[in-house]
Image 1 (cartoon, rainbow, N blue to C red):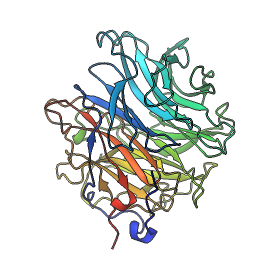
Image 2: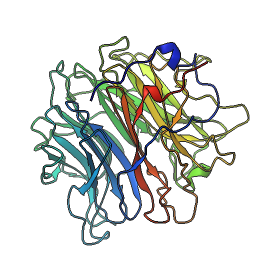
Image 3: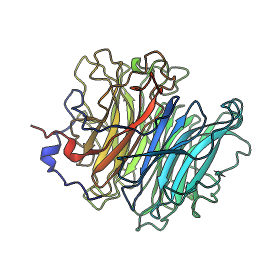
Image 4: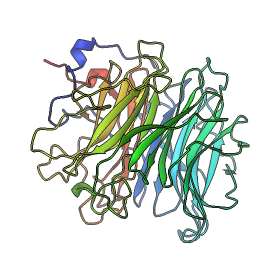
Length: 460
């Protein structure tokens, strides 16, 4: 696909943080890529670094306990649904979740997930399957690391080093939470140099903390590995880096602390009107500028930060390659809130996903936003972009033309699916999100659309 033409910076971005208000109209078209009965959740998506017409997505099917696969070979215009393996005979027999996808420079596709057998009372373990391309069969599931004395694994993230400048090119990484029998969480990382057939012994990333969740991993052009996570025990986010291909990590660095009233079952998360009784978490997401542009090497961490009113908003921190903070808000605090809220209004913005376009260095962030609903119940999946290293942001646009309402009868307790997905290449962004518009017929479904810089309304 040809790259989308670049717009002038002044025509695309507002000065400083965005003005208040909802997203502008959705460009469309939107596609239901799942089309499956039962609630879909936890969507994820990746683009082939050698052919951006090829996309791989996945989700969790709460009814089947299977790992659905969604493939496109025409840039997201059409999709084919399959599965990494047949569904178990019953959900009680075995269940799976927390999918992640990645594609290497040779076109090999990877799918990571957790499986527990039996579903209730089992010990969730981390597996990875792979295939040579979108029409090939999946390999047998490979257990990344035996649990040993650990109790279970949780919430993996996967990434592949596709950079020609990296000494670890083709290496596949997974980072996840490992929980001991004493209930202590660690963030660990393992890698594979043989296309997922075998995996290295897990390396511990964190130096402190006891309840660590939502690991996220990203890679720099020269092979540096970055891992971040949510420390529920300290109500904070942490980050660390490795310069030796994940063999060891430097001491972790503190990103931000949350000033919240703890909710026992939420950890550092909160409960909002739009999400029913389920918890909204910070959901940190790392992305690295692997372009050769002005901000090459910059590291970004996006997440939901809760306001004292209880309404979360989206914040992005920017770092140098050595993890020196370089982003500041107008108040002087680290991190930039990407959408400013009207005084007195308390919309919720949550489950953010971020990704950097390696062709230009443009940083994209997509998230749910209730600002168009005075009751802050209906949430519209929306996206924005920064072309100046995360300092200023374009007015958000709707990825979804229809707002989702997870409070209506029949909605899944998972509501908006725990996390969403975003992949960007050559000026085209592919968000995937959990949508309730088909609730009466298929329950929650996974939708996607194509966005470009030209979809954003010029300022002024």
